[in-house]
Image (cartoon, rainbow, N blue to C red; front, top):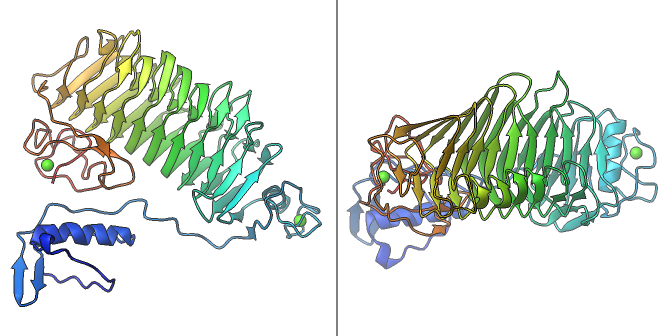
Length: 467
Ligand SMILES: [Ca+2]
Ligand SMILES: [Ca+2]
């Protein structure tokens, strides 16, 4: 027996005075404090003179996205104005009137050769009159993901990283209401290493491509890297890549939400090509809900590489997305997709050629341990001009025109509603003892589920592991 010492005030309800009930309460309490918990041992509980020992639990859980840790800023914004720095490169962020605006801080950073770290306080909304442009490496963070806001005022692009290969990182603030007639209304970037966490991108509208972000690799020497964690893209729109578009060598999305993004051609969530060499794109614990592409292909995501892309998508939920065709995924040239332990519910196509998946010529799509339930639209669930391989243990309510394996089934897994079940994203619970419970091939199960609960040795089909 290992003992756990709790220093935080903690109320235990009488009705939960059982080992496993208490474990659930402890987990909820520790999560609320931002702590991580992993309990694999039996739990001993003493109430008065009575000691109860649980039999242990498989509910091993590691908290994700439990808060941004601020670095020490070089400049802290003290004005939500939009004036320029008086003397760029003198080490002082000041517009000449005592104001350190975001624009002045970025100009000062560039003036010093880059590399500065800038803080936007909580409770500050900055509406820029023209794009904030920078040419050298930069870090910007906010005091609050929701109340540190940089807005394009529905009139201009918000940020423009115009020098090829510039590295930058944005954390813990909101970029909203960018507007551009060219690619990237929230951010336009060229090459470089981009890192975002605890960011919200909302309602950025490009009448070209990439509502929130456009990342160009249009230079032979550039192989952009994009890493995003604990962030949300909501209500962004563009022709292609409603939230994001570009060419990326290494793409890593972990705990990222895409909701209500819109495209009219390809990829309401995102449309990514590769790079000048082989690329690796990895999505884990991502969530796509309510993204739409009424006239084009793919409401959630699309890959199309001129060089090979190895894409791996795990522990992700696709819920109520709608496209003319391929409401979940489209791939084209040179993309090999590994699609394991994902859940798809109530996604719809309009006219086709597919309701859920389109694998075009040159694309290879490997699927295992995934649930596809209650879709609607065209008769063909899949449109396969490339190669689709079912590696088995999927639940397809309908698999018309898809490739399937003998171990795939069509039994109702008893999905719940999409809900906050723990973790950063919402997820869709399965019915314990239902068709999905313990039905997966462990060779393809990730070690934890969409909520970051450990998976059982005999793991479940879909993004959610019942405990
Ligand atoms: Ca200055
Ligand atoms: Ca299970």
